[in-house]
Figure 1 (tube, rainbow, N blue to C red):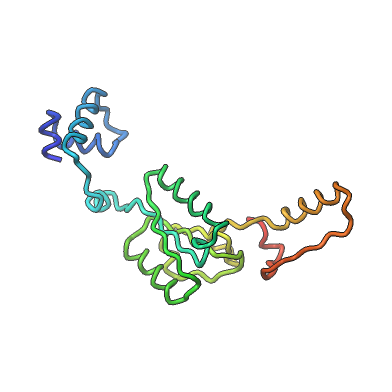
Figure 2: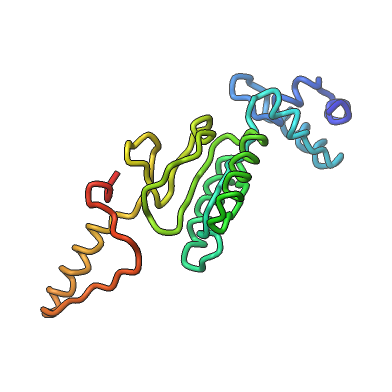
Length: 194
C-alpha cells in the first residue's frame, strides 16, 4: 500500500479509502484514477485477512449441503448462490457432506472456525431438520428444509401450489384420470409455505 501511495502521489490513507470504496469520504475522480492505475501497475492485492480483522467480516458465505451439490438438477441452486454472493462482494465456501453426520459436524465446525459471515444449509429433499447449535451463532438460512418451530428462516418449494397447478393444467386439457408418483416422504401441508 505504501508503494501504491508513493506511485500515485497520495497518502496511504487515501489509498485505503479508494481500495475499500469508503462511501463516507469524498475523493476526486482523478485521484481515484491515479490510485487504481498505481494498483494495476504494481499488481497490488489487498490483504484479505487484514481487511477481515478490521471489518470483523470474512466476506465468505458457507454453503453446507448433504447431496445437493452433486445432483445435476440442483447445480443451479449452487450457481445462483455463487452468482449472488459474487455480485455482493462475497465468495461461497461449499462443503458437500454426502449425508455423513460426522462430515456435517466437521463442516459446521470448519465454518465456525473460519468465521464465515453466514451459512446456507441445504438438504436434498425438503423435510424437517434439527440444526446444529453452532448454526445459531451465524445468520443461517435453511434451503429445502425447515425447523418445526420456525426458529430459522427457510426456503422450501411450494409443492401444494405446484401440485394444484399441474392438476389444473391437466384438467384444462381434458384429462380426468390423473396419477401421482412421489418418491419422497410427504411433508405436512402446514410446512409447505413460509
